[in-house]
Length: 55
Image 1 (cartoon, rainbow, N blue to C red):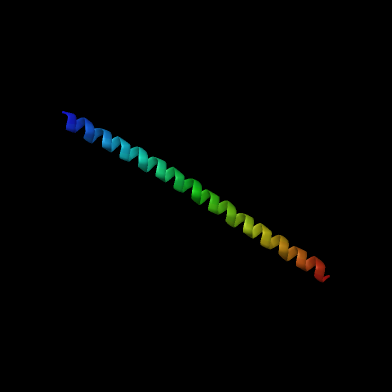
Image 2: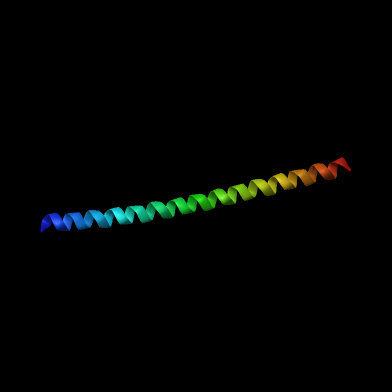
């Protein structure tokens, strides 16, 4: 009986760990997407600045 409770608790703990880990990965991927978007914006702004100064 005690072994079954421990086994059940271990499964619940594993499931919670997986959920937390996956949510952290989702936040990291979203953050990387934001960073890449910022790099693209900065590159476009730099290109426009060069084009204005070349006129």
